[in-house]
Image (cartoon, rainbow, N blue to C red; front, top):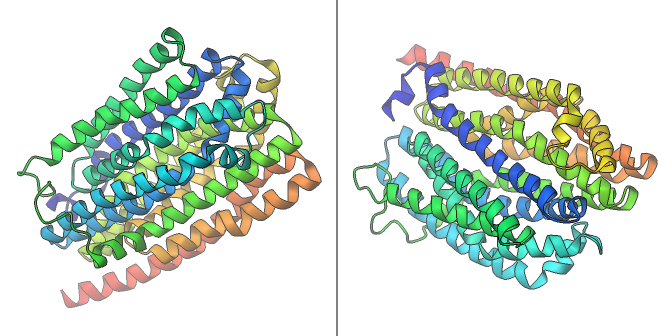
Length: 452
C-alpha cells in the first residue's frame, strides 16, 4: 500500500487497472453471454431478449443499493489506509459485510411478492412478462449473494489486492459460461437456466473472496468486534456512496422510460433492440469502469495523504485511457454494427432496428469516457456532493426531459437521440467542474510545498 504514495503513476494505474479491466470486461462478457445464449437458446428468441431487457431496471435498482455500500466503503477504506488508520479501515470492512447482507435480504423481501406489477411498470408486455418473471424470480431470491459478492470485490481492490478481485470475477464468468449451455440447452430450463447460472457462479466466487479475508496476515481481514454497525462509519459510507446510488437509481428510471417508450412507439422488437445495444455499449463502458476502479485506490490514498499533484496526474491519465476506449467503441459500432448485432439474433427485423439505434446512440460515444472518469474522480476522493451533482446533471437535467419530450414528437427516433444529446451537454458541464477542482488542487499543492 505504501507504494501508492510514491510509486510511478503510470505503473500503478496499470497495476491496479489491468486486473480491474480484465474483471470488468469479463463481467460484461458474462452479461453478453447470458443474452446470447437466451437469444439463441430460448424460443422465440426476440421476445426472450425483450423480456431480459425489461429486467434491466431491476438490475440497476439492485446495483444502486450495492453501490451505496460498496463504492462508499471502498473509497473510505482507501482514504483510511492513506491515513494509516488500519483499525478504522477494518471497521469499515466489517460494517460493509453486515450492510450488504441486510440490504440484500430486505431488497429480496420487498420485491419478490410484487414481481409482475413491477415488471409491467418496467415495460413488460403480455408477450414478454413470462420471460422477465422467470428470470427475475431466481435473481431476486439470490440477491443477497450478489450484494455480498460485489461488495467483497470492492473491498479486495481497496485493500490492495486487485489481482484477487480479478480472479474472483474470472472464476464467476467461467462458471457462468459453463453452466449456461448446460442449464439452457441440456436441462431445458430456458431463461431460468441463465438466472440459476448467474446466482451459482457468484456463489462460487464468493467462497474464494471469503477465504482471502480469513487470512489474518492481511491488513483487512475478518476479526472480532468489526461487525457491530457504527453510526459514524455507516453515515460516511452512505455519504460517499450516495452519488453512485443516485446514479444507478436514475439509470433505473431512465431504462424504465426507454423500455416504456420503446414498447409504446416500436413494440417488443424495439425493446429488444435497446437491450442488445445496451449490452454492447456496456462492453466498452465496463472497460472504462475498470480504469476507474484502478484509479480509485490511487486517487483516494494520495488525497488522504494530501499529495494533490499525484491525484491530478492519475486522473488525467485515466481520462485519456477512458476516451481511447470509448473512441474505439465508437469506431467499431459505427463501422461494423450488423456484425455485432448478429451475435445476439438472426431475426432480420430485430437486426435492422438494432443497427439503426446503434448508429444514433454511439454518435458522441468518445465523450462518455471523459464524463465517466471525471465523475468517478470526485467519488474516489470522497467529494460526494460534486459527484452527485454531475451524475444528476446528465441524467435528471438533460436525459430524462429528452426522454419525456422527444419521443412524443419523433417516436423511437426521439428515444435514440436523447442519449447522445444528454452525453454531449453533460460533458461540457463536467469539464467546467473538473477544471475548477484542479485549480484548487494546484493552489493547495503550492501551499504544501511552501511549508514543507
